[in-house]
Amino acid sequence: MPAEEIHGETRLPVRKPSWKMIGPGMVVAATGVGAGDLVATLIAGSKFGYTLLWAAVIGCVVKIALAEATGRWHLATGRTIFDGWRSLGPWTTVYFAVYVVVWGFVYGATAMSSSALPLQALFPDVMPLKAWAIITGLLGLAFVWGNRYAIVEKIMMVFVGVMFVVVVYCAIRVSPDLGDAFAGLAPTLPSGSMIYTLGLIGGVGGTITMAAYGYWINAKGWTDVSWLRMMRLDNRVAYVTTGIFVVAMLIVGAELLHSTQIALAEGDKGLLDLDEVLENRFGAFTANLFLIGFLAASFSSLIGVWHGVGLMFADFVEHVRAHRAGKDPAETEVVEIARGARERSLPFRLYLLWLTFPPMALLWLDQPFGLVIAYGVLGAFFMPFLAVTLLWLLNTSRTPEEWRNGWLSNGLLAASAVLFVVLCVEEIRDLPW
Image (cartoon, rainbow, N blue to C red; front, side):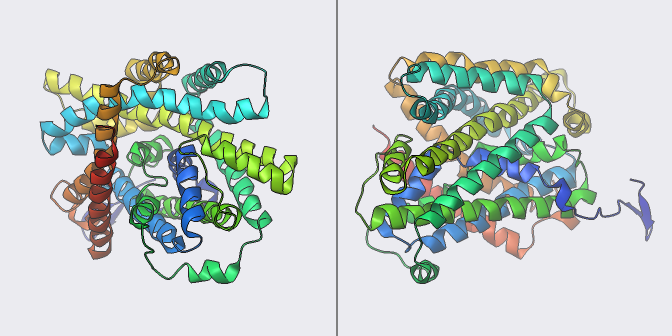
């Protein structure tokens, strides 16, 4: 689009937002909502009914603020989030390097196992769980390896649709008490609910893939501030959809589990417990439909991480190479992402292999104690790291003055930073030291 001359300055005209172009936000939202998030939301509903519904709504607002800040950095500066982190000092590069290697190794096994659970439940006695896990890992690898962002977005939109329809259907099926649900919008903290409240606000849909949002909007072809309004529409629609999804899961937990005092197992296997409850209450059709939604949530997270974090790793490697050569990669990096060059790069594909094959060893082994600790600590620090660095980047000369944070964005990012620091401390305390 040609630039316009306004008061002696060259500015890009604002592009009109279009519902037809929504996509990257759905990708990041679907990737961030995995099986573990579903279980956490169900358990919150089973323990406290509708009381924490307000926390799910606030969590939606927090995610909108974080994703908007990430996208605005990419569009306003023409630089990736990793380039922004690197400008804050070498400590960010060290943290990211260790994080992306250790986290990727453990997450690969977790994502494959999570995707395998509903498949084994849908097709019992066909093959063992480990075999299903390997198949899902290989399918994810082949899909991301062989397709560019446009195809990834399309399949992720399908997964979002399946997840949304299934979970909302289940919420309607359990006949929610609308009076209690609306009462749950009033902020209250029952005894023992603090951690569940913080988890609902900060946990659902919040992972490293929030930082990948900027890479996906660049891959979509949105590379400058003329796309800012479109990015904001995309982001809000995606996280409002996620908010409805989370509220629906809370309703299922409140109506199906809280009223009957049924307890779920911790971790992804808790969803198999819910499958049994649904089958006993509503029959095999509803139970199998839920397993399909479970599969969509798990496999969409796998594909999203393989693609989004792969792009981040490729950007990281490019920066390390450029630094050693005394060059600045920022001048071409956004354009390269938009053209799909990063998706064909060797570092991108090497990281896909790292996410797929080494973690398969963990399917046969208990995760080593030291690895569990390292994974937990690095993961707990990431969301505070993202919130704090976004505040830093978007309030300094690194961002053009016109596109820096306003009071609302600063307030939401500061609140989320405090929230994630508290969650970080709690997660580290809960590790099996």
